[in-house]
Length: 321
Image (cartoon, rainbow, N blue to C red; front, side, top):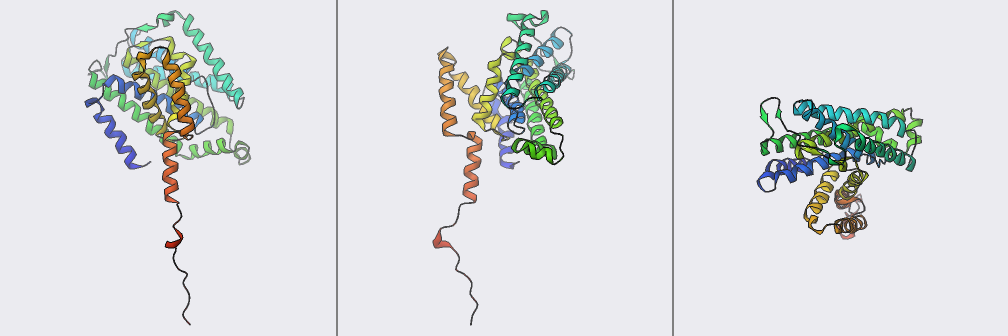
């Protein structure tokens, strides 16, 4: 990981409340973590999921119920939501990884729609009204999360934890096997790797990180709605990842900043937001085919390997007679 990029990310996180509304930044962190979870699955393992909102939303509902109805502290509520998302990911993953390509994507979408239907019908979810008035509580019993700065730095800490967790996974031997599976699955099988097990573990890790994002988002906004489990939310994760840079570490964060900022500033346009976002997405894909971060990385790599001008080439060394 490049030290300047990490230092910039930390400085941005620590100083952002001085210039930006903290709730806006917390929303970016939550969706960036959600996009990183999707990027771990698709960008590094090559598994395209259309149902990641199921993990975000199910974790949000479990966290809201645990904190509001059961009276659990926020840290236990987040753990409960993240654990529920990971368990759901284990069940969905066992079914989905039996298929490949578009069939895998369709299975994840179908199972996510089942989760959406359950959230509509379940009595504790509030149906179309959702869960509202979820208390933030006191972290570890003494940190009041109703204090905006305390809540902000708590969310920042969760985001950084997820960020470095993804970095560690990707740059471990486990991550190298994932890349091998993405590039050439038959060859990975021929080398003796249990590809199905690697896929399942990655799916569960991705679901858990998405659940962590959903649980954190619940405490930030103190509500959960059906939007959190809707298929369009899964599409936002895809959009953020592709705009920022698929298969990059910083790409999902950059994509989340771009998408959330555009949605915020274009909110006054009503239904035109969808059209404008679609046009912007098309422009980004056509202009930055590797995403913003991916394109910048490619340009930097080209500068390093750029050949020297012929006039600057060193003269051949000849032996004196």
